[in-house]
Length: 465
Image 1 (cartoon, one colour):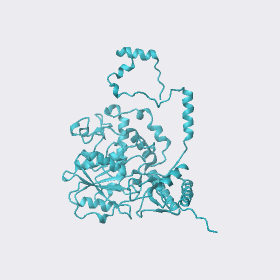
Image 2: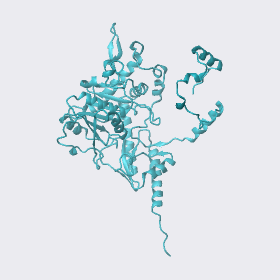
Image 3: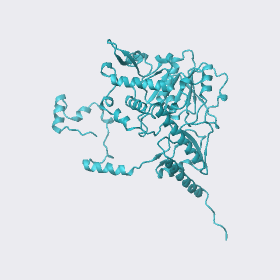
Image 4: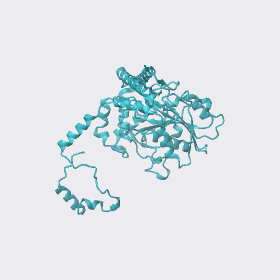
């Protein structure tokens, strides 16, 4: 907590200036029954030296863990320059750049971000970010319903291979707006949608959502799926891991025409794991849908002297201009995280992003090869993959994870709760931050744990004399 310099005399002077008897008077309008009765669980205050010692002791209890969990949040190396620049006062304290003449630096950065994301996804237009990947998908669904005026059904085909949290958030946002999310199941052998399972006459569909890679790390047949949706008059929403786009075909080139909207979470670009956030969502689209896109868009223009400048554009879509006709209630963006992502992409460049993606994929493949050699462990799906994969155990995966955690290893993401049919399955991921020694440590510990658990489940009976 920052040092608060106000003395009792300062506080009294401020209270006198506003005509309040004491600080309690400032909260007089709050009913007594709504006030906390006390903070019994909070210990008595201690001095600065003791607080520092306590925090140091707690920090010593923590230890660095080896993280092999992905599931939408990935541990990538972040160059020190990224947050050194991001937390400069010019960016750190800046808010919404309504006043263009005083916000050229922020506006130019957001413009550069939009340019990079549009290029990366192969789309025409990008907004200046959304809250996170899940809200970006929800907004993309609302946008598709607005943009596809020929469709009256408000039916959205939602694969089960989309991130479970994304599906939950999307359902929460659209369930009271007459929008129907129809689940598409995945093939148990592929771990992805089998295009042959799609109906030949699906009726009126507003949009199809396609994850790439999907939640299991498997690659979908995006070209076939995109063409199928367009042939049946539906729009296509791509949900992508932006890091994968350094080596995979961008959504703007899927099928014959490309997708209509692309979205996802920008966390892989310079945002640390941070116990789950904050992250930021991104969204890009085709030019014809730009007026239905939520959030801010920064445009490049020239001033009266012919000098280049930047400003918010298409503001008539925004909540602060025409609230009743706004495309979304999102009236701000994750500007600080976008700043970090822009600097991250600028520092790495296309070649650097490609090397990170390739190294991550190579590490995941190496990890799978090592894990598959452990008795009782197998790779579950046979589709091509990126970045992460599903493995299945003969043992209860909860016991395996608990034992790995005791060794300082986050073994992966357990799938049982979200996919009951994937019992004792684990989603594992290895980014470029993992060395071969890290992979070996994971596998060696897993081997030892597996042997011990198997012995405990099948004790050897003593031989009869």
